[in-house]
Each structure stands twice: as C-alpha cells, then as structure tokens.
Length: 453
Image 1 (cartoon, rainbow, N blue to C red):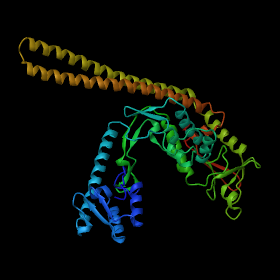
Image 2 (image 1 turned 90 degrees about the vertical axis):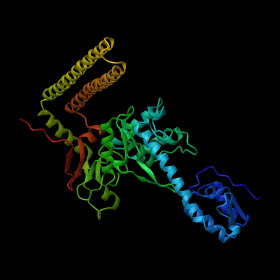
Image 3 (image 1 turned 90 degrees about the horizontal axis):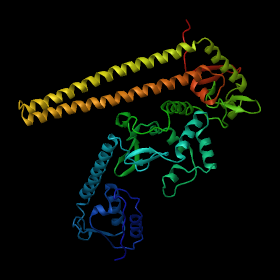
Image 4 (image 1 turned 60 degrees about the vertical axis):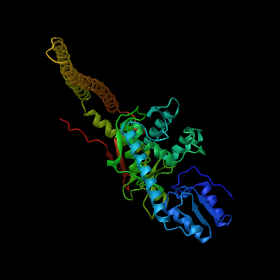
C-alpha cells in the first residue's frame, strides 16, 4: 500500500487536494493500482471519470472498485461509461433536491444563503439589522454614490479609514482588508437593503460546473417587506438610475458637484472638472485633445446659478398652500376609507360571535348534535380569524398611509423652499445636463413644469 488519499469535497469537482495528489503520483508512476470503494469515490462527474480512466491507460495503471463494477486487471472496463453517467445523474438529482429545499425556504420568507448581506445578521432564518457600524457604512455608500462619488473613490476611502470589508465581517478565510469597485457594486445593487427578500438571482449551470447564470425576473423569489430596510426604496431606485447613466460614459477622474451628471452635447463624454478653470471641460477633449472634441468649457458657478434661478422662478408660480392642503385632503380621504372598512369588519365579527352563541343554545336544546356543532364552530372561528387578520392589515395600511403622507409633505416642503443646490437635490431634480460647444447648458429636469392657471 503506497498511500491512502482522502477528500471531503464533492466528487463532482476536480479541485480536490488529495485527488490532484493521486493524479500527480499516477503520472509520476509511483503507483500500479488505484483501489476505490466504488467509481463515485473517484468522481461523480462523467468528464472527470474519463480523464482519470485515460490517465491510467496512458500510464499503465489499473483501477479496481470494491463493488466489482470496474477491474482493469481482468479487462472489466465495459461498465465504466454507464457507471460514470449514473453517478453524475445521482449527483444532479441531489443538487436539484437541495435547490428545491432552498426555494421552499425562500418562499416562506427565510434567507437561504450562508452569508447575510453586509449590515445584516441572520436570526431564526430571518435578516435583522446588525447592532454595529455596518448598517451606517451601507447608508454612507448609497449616500456618497448619490452625491456623485464613484465606486472606486468610495472603496478607496473606506480602505484608508480601516473600515472592515464584508468578507472580514463575515469571518471568511483569507478575507482581504481592501475594499474594491466590485464590492461596492454588489452593495449598491442588492435589493435586500430595501427590506425585500429577493432570492434565486443566480444558479449553477450544472452540478459539474461552478459557473453561475443569472436568473430571469420570472424565476426570482421575491418577498416584499420581509425584513427591516436599511435603505429607503426611493434612494435605492435613484442609485440604480445613476448606475445605468454612468455605465454609458467615461467617468471623470476627479469628483465635483456636476461630475457624472454634466455631459458634452457633441461627443457625449462626461464633463471633467478643472480647478484652474473653476469649471468643466469635455472629457473627450481632456483625454484625447482637439482631434476628439472641443473644450465646451463652462464655469461651475454659472451652471449653479442657472439651475437655482430656473427652480426659484418656478417656485414663485406655485401655490404652496394649495399642494399641502391637497396632501392633507388625500390623507383624510384615505383614513375615512380605512375606517369604513374597519367598521364593516367589526360588524361582521360581532355578527359571527352572535351566531356562535346561537349554536351553543341549539346544542343545549339538543336541536343539533355534537358533531354538527363542532363543524359549525370550526367554520365560524375560521371566518372570525380571517376577519381579524384583515383588520390588522387595514390598521397597518392606515399607519403606512399616514407615514407616506408625512414623508411627502416633508419632501414637498424641502422642494418648495429650495435655496441651495446640494449634490442630493441636484441628482433628485436633474436627469442630465448637456453642455454645448459655446458653453451653453441644456438642462433635463426630472419633473414637468405644472400648468399655471
């Protein structure tokens, strides 16, 4: 006996330390016979099985399995193909059963991954916000990106500040301390941060391949509001919009107020800030020179004042009190509608309770038998329970309406009292800005001017 080779990894993969050692020893002719309990111990992958078979044939090494299926010393190799296929199919079926189990957990609103998203922890299969600094780091990443910072820029600052990476927080082996672009992108595109449980986004191509494919929207398992959000939904959507815009252009090398929102009207490249000009020039011109494009230079202060003047002029035409009253009126209407529904549910519950008392009287007077009484009571209790659930949902809906109206009022007040152009307001109100060759800006706002009576 030359050596015993033991691995605990899946037999569907060739990336097993001791299997590779066995192959190396076979190639170096250190062994004459490979003895295995059965072929599946060597490989549960048809392609890998044939690679081992060809290796042994080329180096004069025999394979014997203790179940009698394979014995090359006796020329017994005709069942090699069927057994290799059978073990791979068995592994595939096991994989599918595991996937179905994970899908069932996902449909119940349980997180099926082994590592929760950065900022969350898992308790009883549910995601809960961590009681440390990581949720604030997630909020910071979203806010900085919305303020115009690039992913590399955000990653660089987090690394320089010594902020632990997601891998370090998860306690993974060989976790690096460097944040990078891809880590920031994973956080910015993860819908779990809005409170929705979105699972099944990727899956393996097959049991013999580690390559993953992206699932279609129809295949996703989505449970809305499954856990407490870290990021408001409107902020998450604004970031997704910004990511689409930025992916189509060359990012500016230095972040400034209009970085990734101002573009050259002729070549479409992003405008780059230049401190010596106190303004912006075409990114194509800055990178490649006059042959690519002209400077399209514009002063930052000119652009700021143009936008402030536009919005303040619009604000003067708007009746602020009218819009605030409209919001309050909608809130009252919604509350009245919910209250009517609650009154109706309460009447139905009272009627069912009264009916329940009548059933008791009928049983006492022996007008119905015990079996019929039990059936009636079970049906009655089921209706009451359904109404109680509906009542709770209505109350929750009522609270959400009030919260949403208050939020809208706050945002409207912020919008109507506009006096300073911050990065957050800029990205919320403006889709993009195109700078013409003479420095004239063409501004694409995210809203339409209201019709003034």
